Length: 298
Ligand code: 6CS
Ligand code: FE
Image (cartoon, rainbow, N blue to C red; front, side, top):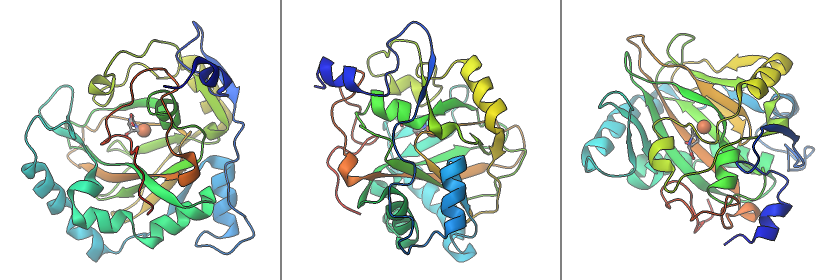
């Protein structure tokens, strides 16, 4: 259990005070040697450092992508309806997310350990990496609900025990991410600020938060401040395009009332040196399908 002293030493306290706060990031964004050769060029690294994300156009070929939706359907059909890795939309019986897809599907396991992803993550994080979490977020047409603004790191620090901001996500479009079908939105530059949230984390919070997160979500004042400072970037692109973003980016997505589903696979790489400790919020760790606690190098 993270000791009270360890929790007190965290530069990223959250869900402890009665008022929100915007705190400075004390971690680097680019942990690796920026002059060392790697798949991301200097301009991409600069964009990532400044904005917190970078687009990876045509990361996958059409041929690689075209079979993935059917593979997801196969995985969904293979799971018992009450399998915790299946998250259902709060207001319909539509599947919202499938977690641990890299463990459920050899196809996705191969994709999410592909050097085209892993080497980019290693370059930014300056370390060997492992998969902290993977998921498919399905934003079904007509029924896909929003994901409120949040920092993933805030949850991973408080509820999973991720010590520092030395992790990143890659979101790969499996269907077209359009301006109108609930695509990922990121507040530019928000990764450089840690928004300390109010609210006490309930036991087994994930059972509710994965459907609709209400605790560990930043206050509207802080969101407004960050949005005015950096603006909102919407991550658009065809199937096969991707966005790599820092664990602490403030991000969210609108609901999808269009007929066009927006399905993305997300994978989170954590630096091996940043392996999870006990949750900084003092509660029991979340289940392994949400947060790898026994990392196997990738
Ligand atoms: O709690 C988590 O780990 C998940 N929740 C959100 C809203 N984004 C990151 C992750 O999928
Ligand atoms: Fe998120």
